[in-house]
Length: 138
Image 1 (tube, rainbow, N blue to C red):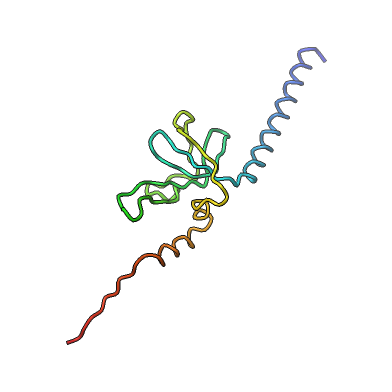
Image 2 (image 1 turned 90 degrees about the horizontal axis):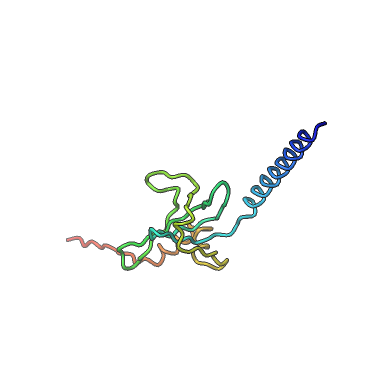
């Protein structure tokens, strides 16, 4: 075997090992990635999701927080994938558009809402004032 063939074989083996490690690491990180992060962009948008780095920086299980004009509820929270224009599950972000990012604490109200949105809606419905209409017959 010539010297060039030995070098090529070594390079191929190293590349295969690197590829196996990369694939294993990505699968491990996906199954272990239970932390949610808040990411604030230069556009003023605030997203909540699980951070991923491969093949590029992205959020999965994305929630969007927006300001509203309602004084009682100044913010609305919605699942990004359920937007009217039908985006996918992942939101890919340019690094230079990030103003800040912060990991949510396990006791975060937002994290509680994400994990159980039905119970949060039931609490909101119970705390909303109800209006009763009465009719009188003559």
